[in-house]
Length: 431
Image (cartoon, rainbow, N blue to C red):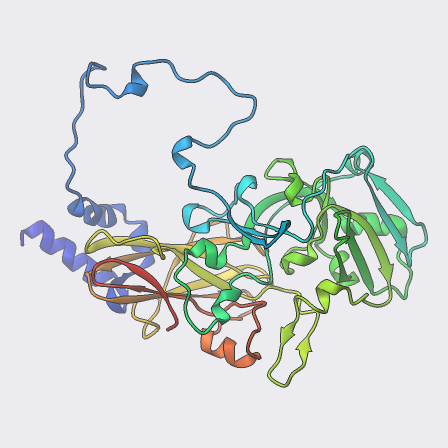
């Protein structure tokens, strides 16, 4: 071993903060240390030509395509698509998941935001659609899209997570599917619209009101009961997603946004808000989206999504390319607010190191975490756990399972694990 290699090895040992080669997060900022390890594992040879000649790639020899009215991804990225699960014989009912393992950053492209439909996507004429606010109000009101456009707007970056996301972890055997299939009922967008508080204030809420029943304009007339307190806090009538009008599968021309609350409550194609003094006990808050308890009962109205994280790289379907330096990367989130820290383990939870959080760390938004790892080619078990600003930390999967009755699949936020074999293959395991 030469002097340079000895120095690099010594630096890595100095930076190690947890078992199995996890490296202190400051190593990600010390690019000389990290890039030296990457370069040492590379076998390619750099070559530069003085001019464009016969050996130049084809795309440098001919003019490219002309302008297009609406941009589309490169055809080289055609595999970056949503992952579908459709109910048999019902093409409009089911889910499509975001391929989280194929994305970077924290903002989900609008065309890859997960979907959950109960009876297909309605084709709504925005010129004929209105939002009604009625019930226990002093002035029942109807808002057209044009009328809402005249109100002051605000923008929030927030995640939406289906309460059934990651429910597959309640099954006895670990499923060997991608991180997108495991956790893809989760997306994060920049939402722009009108604060619901503003509209409710215009209608005038009566003193005995406690709930708001939100109803969609789809063929299922999907309805949910929402605490008035949430509606008067950070709720929004969202009109734009990532800078453009909300797409039909996300609720065009308008949807309800309830930051941090389970996805089903963020009613799409919103048409009616009925202010009441009690919940309505709709189908989607009684037969679905409840928590089955060991004693035979079910908890209802469990709204906020818990503190949670998932490692996306490496994950199932990927393969390590031999020993050396790698970056472990994933997402963390909490319906209670900001993520305060994410810890990563490479030895099945025996030791933990703090990951670097990519800023800005926003409340009720996805946060990207990163951890440097010097993998020496030995079998390893990767895990991550998030803690939010309220002090709540992800439970172990075993602790989560013990709290519920068999078959409970909603609101899973237990710690997830990936096994790395000596040959570099990655498997989903219960550790």
